[in-house]
Image (cartoon, rainbow, N blue to C red):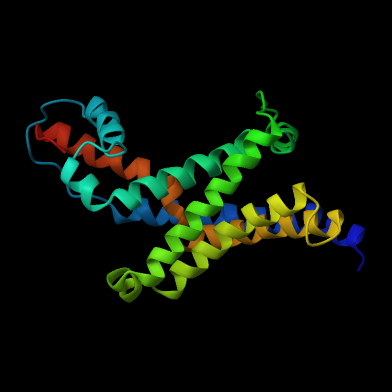
Length: 220
């Protein structure tokens, strides 16, 4: 198989397989969450809980507690740096927008490639820093499992291969582009069965907790 054939495979059958596994896996996850159910709320409803749910999403995403911020400064800085960089790399790079438009018929303006390149680099630096801390911090190292390192790897590789592909480094462009697409497909396959599902569950769980607390008239 030459580079052109490999690229055609990852852009065709490979992407199809990854998409089916991702969709089925996430569907199973959603069903599992709803099957957990919840106990009937016996307390008198103080409000609908909707406003409190959205408020909790916002407050849990902000650095409001100085003591928590002081203890977890690295987590906040590295975490926000990575997520902002990843968002910019995925949703503001012109070729990615073209792909989204082709699939979903949605498009928006792109940022200059140099800006996207910068955010991609800082996202990779943040991920490397997070990995270093995990491997050197005694408690984190003890708590870490193989899944944690797997999640880090499948998240880092699309950024790295995308950077190498854009700059025509390491491998001929066609090969590097194919490897980049393949790394994204591996991420899609792994996504539903690991902690990466927090991408979808973080905000919904925060809304749920805030909503329940609001209905009971307590602060979440």
